[in-house]
Amino acid sequence: MCQKNKSIFIAALVSLILWLQPYPVHSEESIFLDLVKTTQSTVNIAVPHFVYSGGGEDESFSEKSRNILENDLRLFELFVPVAPNVYSELEKSEAQTDQPDYAAWSQLGAQWLIKGKYGKSLSGGDKYKFVFRLFDVVNEQFLVGKRYQGKKSFMRKIMHRFADEVMEQLTGKRGVAETRLAFLTRTRDGKEMYAVDFDGANVQKLTDEKSVILSPDWSPDGRFIVYTSYREHNPDLILLDPDGRRRRRPLLRLPGINSAPAWSPDGSKISLVLSKDSNSEIYVLNRWRKLTRLTRHFNIDTSPTWSPDGKKIAFTSDRSGTGRPQIYIMDASSGDRTGVKRITFQSRYNDNPNWSPDGDKIAFTSMVKGNFQIKIYNTETRKTTDVTSGPGSKEEPTWSPDGQFLAYRLTRGRQSSIHIKRFGGKKSRQLTFLPEGGVSPTWSPYPKR
Image (tube, rainbow, N blue to C red; front, side, top):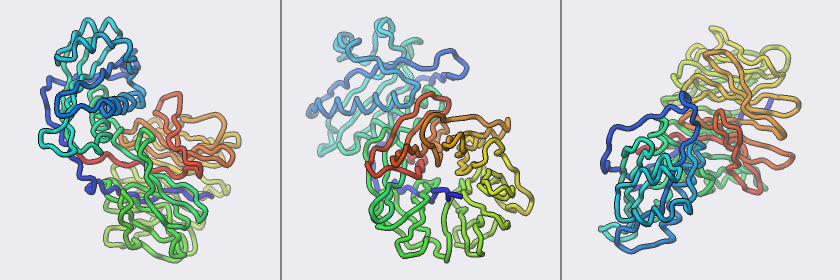
């Protein structure tokens, strides 16, 4: 059975020192649109060029910022940006006013509109300020306004943050443009860990292990990443700051397997797989480094994942007696002593369970006609649905913090990369393009505001 490449990845965003505190400009009651209950599945949104507000204009900087914001909205797959040439004359006539001509924008096909201003901060230095206003053209209402300021190097995060605000206005859930994904890539000496933004930009190398590493997992508070490293010739559990600057002392160092760590939702415990008792079993490690054994079976148990309420753990085991791994659920306190519930029956090989943030779904890898595909088990209806299909093997699913996207490894021949697919969407998007490939993705939590 393949081990789930999952580990503890706690992201330390404290070190970013970002001046991104949003201040309300003016706000009427937000309008919530439930796309599931309407026939409309997308919103046409116009993002005109940002208006210069004094302090040293930088047109290339302005256009780059606007493109990042527009691209984030496109990647959410619920917004369709209106082409700039459609509204070029209208945006010129409105350049000096904050109030839009709703009728004119509506005639051009825009349903929502973002008006943005930018300029150098009055405090001087390398600081910029941005002011955004979001309008509902159809209902002729102002939805929300935000003001941000920060160093020029923080521009991407400012755009991501407002894109997430726009998404929240539409769906009631914060967007994930600010989140990152960590993953592993092959090297001559083993593997190393990288991180990348949701839009596929800002790729950053995090480790320099020069050895085999496995199973990264991001902590719920975003302060660390945990993973298994063989750098000291033993599969040690290592904590890493999410910017890669600080590698902590081994969290656990026992002979045999120390792998597949998964954080509990409150961040106080880690479930993991150990073989210190001559078999692959699931344990829980608390903050005082005390171990509690959860499984006691002569077959292999691995790949634990917690339910969002912390009461259940789904895991992989071949305890069915067929020698073929399946997904089970057990109590997170008593383990398999009080019984387990098998949830997969449609394939001879199922692995890599990952519980959704909302708690009603478990994504997992399943063998289908010689390839691995991603499936989802609904814990309420107890039904299983397909997420992926087609050529290539898709494995190691990980949920976005809003529960709307899945990232996974796609392998075709010798080539592997990380892909993202919106839950219920038809197409996937390739996220990583490193020539050495990408495996074992883990999605960060929301960064703190």
